[in-house]
Image 1: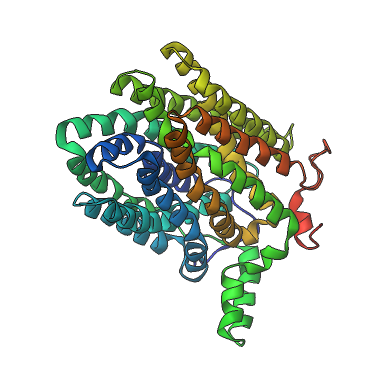
Image 2: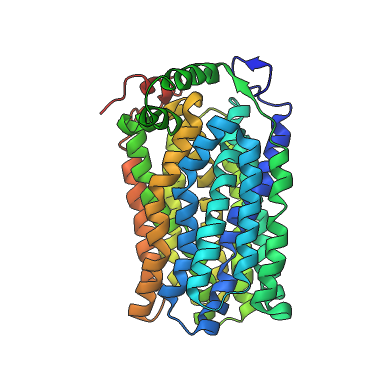
Length: 428
């Protein structure tokens, strides 16, 4: 732990290097996930399997990333974020490398889904929590800048992966991707430890738990007391519903475009355009939230609703220009929504519980990540196209926005009272 104790997040300084590290970390985790649709098409053709079966590769990876987040949070509480992130980079890169030797879908489930997914958990959760710990007033902007790595990498990775597959086949492309993933070790080294005043209280609680049994220590490390925090649990339910539909375009939009008769490079470009709009949305949303003129909760409800509506419109893109326009709108709204999700969390539970809260959020919302893409693939196999898949995905996001409206003070326009005041006495 660092020797200096900060009474509150420093809002700058080395924090901007942490943002830079998180930029590359999000790029090499979710940028890869969002561009994996290029490999999806290759796996369907090579293994001659149904879309629903191949979709489990990405879904297992997303689910393990989220299921493993509480473990990553507990390790960060005990050892700090830096060694956890560096270990995660090693594990995720190794998973991609081993996947290049796959002879069956089961091999891909284990290597990409299980191994790389676990590495992603050890990278993503600590890096985003570290950004939140370094910033307070500019937290939304810092988080938005960190998440621009996803947008930029998605814009670049889709055509890059398609090129690598064309030149080296999917096995060679995965070997190159593993080399890119190993750079997460360098990013992890940039996460300098930071001690906040609230950390001392958390450490005192951990020390007290040493006098109790192992169960009590685990309860403290994993932040399980938040399970009785009802605003937090309603927030988790909303994000789980959102998560069910959120990843569907990044798995099946390329395949949908190919099914509409567009070439493989045209289909990949649709994903790239959405990624570019995503990048703009993240920066704009972070800037707008930090102005303080609107409650972050209201901003999240707004972007979630419009993301769901844009998903409902994707099947209407019968010609290429219309599909590009709808995908651009979807990318902007989806990108604008993402940083607000993580910026709102410290206001609900307090910055001292950010590691545990983010870990539990990722764990519980993994249900949506696990079911979303396979459900979409199953609907495609059942109906013959992806139209129903996008309708259902959009419906999940709209339902999630309705659940967000049940959080405390959602109908109040005042921005003076943060939600974390409710962390002491949760409201039902």
